[in-house]
Amino acid sequence: MPGIVLVGAQWGDEGKGKATDALGARVDYVVKFNGGNNAGHTVVVGGEQYALHLLPAGILTPGVTPVIGNGVVVDLAVLFEEIDALTARGVDCSALQVSANAHIIAPYHRVIDKVGERFLGKRRIGTTGRGIGPAYADKMNRVGVRVQDLFDEHILRQKVEGALDQKNHLLVKVYNRRAITVDEVVEELLSYVDRLAPMVRDTALELHRALGRGDTVLFEGGQATLLDVDHGTYPFVTSSNATAGGACTGTGVPPNAIDRVIGVAKAYVTRVGEGPFPTELHDEWGQRLREAGGEYGTTTGRPRRCGWYDAVVARYSARINGITDLVLTKLDVLTGIERIPVCVGYRVDGRLVEEMPFSQSDVHHAVPQYEYLEGWTEDVSSARVFEDLPPAAQRYVLAVEELSGARISAVGVGPEREQTVVRHDLLG
Ligand code: IMP
Image (cartoon, rainbow, N blue to C red):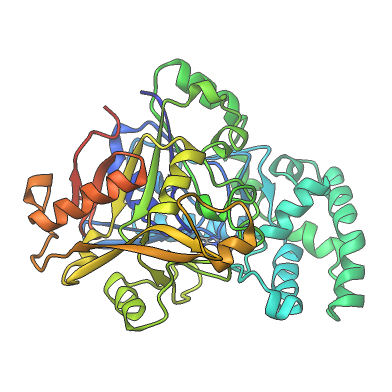
């Protein structure tokens, strides 16, 4: 079972980091294939909380080789800050490998992300402001700077010049900001070269060889299905492919090397930033989920929008990603709710629909249709096998499984690594 993809099945923050971490030492490589430091994984190990933004969650497990694939955009300042912070807490980061083809988030990307959002006003996307979109835009525009470019100053200077050419016009004439000089950017990027050099690899070749040896490689998706630039709620999405297909393009590993696709979904739904969210709760129930679930962003600290479980979204994610196993997280947050609504379809302009509408306007107008499942009051946080869960919680899990079109293989009942009910081995 060597090639396993793990993706978010909703709008992000489903607890992918914990799921990766739980697979732990049984995995040889953990590879990040998309996104950058817009991600935020909170992992709790032995009572210690780690917030990771750029590094793959596998970095916390000794013996695992963490890899940053070509599909990732890398902010080098953040990379080394994160490495330094983890090293200071005793985590060994020396095995980290970075693809020579990954693109760099340069200082101008961060500036453009922030001023661009301000400029959009009411039409803003609510980005994390980390320069992710502008870095991917440059990649597609073929004016990006890649990790490998840092090792040839002449090339680096040429590429930065090319990238800044139009951007300085935009910054000065449209956004009323100061121009950014080629020298300041080149100088900053070169300051990382010595530390970066030992990590840089042809990671596609490395992974090809690892899979050939029968090693277990976990491809860890950042963000989530509904934030995917092609399959999400465009334009309120991130700028990369967060779905399972992104694992191939973002690492150089072919589709037939993928044996299993694990989707991670919360027992309810959250979203940060703007964009449609059919089951969003604007009342005290939303507030209750936010407080009980600690729903504040790991990266930006923003309060997350909260809503009931949406089986339309789950079915869509199962289909787009080919999910073989669903990990349902944060079941404990629902404890104490008498009747738990689960969205089974939408009413769109008078019509009942069971599948995600392809028209963005329809998603904006979708009114959730709920079934109500019986809740439970017992503490579930110490459950480790399915039978430990109170009968109503078991029925909730089974009903969600039936509605979502994918088997639920694990259920999260608390933040700690061990607080998981395993129904089917994710690697077996
Ligand atoms: P960007 O990725 O910073 O460009 O932001 C685009 C959208 O994706 C915004 O709505 C962000 O809030 C959202 N987003 C980006 N990364 C994450 C994440 O890790 N979790 C949840 N939402 C995210």
